Structures are given as structure tokens and as C-alpha cells.
Length: 208
Image (cartoon, rainbow, N blue to C red):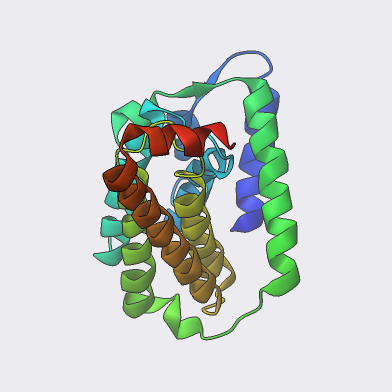
């Protein structure tokens, strides 16, 4: 499945040199390749440290919908029209292709089939789907402009996707680590806001 994703990204990057290609077109090309492939391609833009504004909310809703569908055992994924309509340039698709290749190369150094029952079958679907939906919920939390508010949930979702595609249940432990890091980070920001008001958030943003 991972190789299929890279093939789609490569074809998209070439086509996007002539015209913008929408996210919906790419998702259609993936077809029934699987929920994790779609979640992975949607998660890639959020690995950078800066908030992507309204796109973040649409992606978060998408992850929650896809996670719920996966946990419920659905076979055909559905994403909101707002996200499907987002078009990216050839340069951006090229960056996503490079990032996807890096993720695959890095993941394959550490992954192998372990605890397959955690990532496959109805039980695996419930676990992976639940974690993806939770990551989507963290993405839609109202922290506009906050550095890394996208990155940590995206890393969590990415870990789940690679775990499912490579049938490596131990990678779900990494997903839980990123979940814990996200919760600690958001809790710190909320505590700082209550203690110091808006000045605390401005200070955090100025440090990046």
C-alpha cells in the first residue's frame, strides 16, 4: 500500500506542473487503497510547525469522519467536500512526494510485522480508527497561530497509518506517545492562558 501511495504522489506532482490538482482528485485515484493511505496523504501537510488556518479544521473533521468509519468497519471512505476542493500547486505536491518518501524510508528501517492483531481485523480497525479520530479532534481545537498545534496530532495520525499499513502494532505505542505529548502541550498552553492571559500565548509564538 505504501508503494501505491508514492506512485500516486509522483503522478500527481507531474500533473500539477501543468495545473493545480485538488485533494479530491488524488483521493479518487487512491480508490479503495485503504483508510490509512488517505489519512497519511492528508496528514503530510501538517507535519510542518505552523498552523494552516481553515484547512486545519477541515482536515480535523476529515480525520474524525475517517476514523469513525474505520472503527465502524466501513469499506468506502468519505471526506468532506471542502477538503476535496483544496487544490495544491506542483511545487507543493512535489514537497509532499519528498516527505512521503522520507516517511516511508524512515519507517521501513524500524517496522516489521509485530502484534498484527492490534492493527488488523475488527479489533485493529477499532483501535486505529479511534486513534485517528482522536487525532482529528486535537487538530480542530481552537489554537490558531500556535506553533506545533498541528504537528503533534499529525505525527500521532501518521504513526497509526504506518502501523496499519506495515502491520506493526508496536508503532501504536509511538502514536500513544505523540498523543500524550499533544495533551501535555495543550494543557500547558491552557494553564498559561489562565495564568497569564493572552500575553502567555504571544510569548510562546515569539519563541518560534
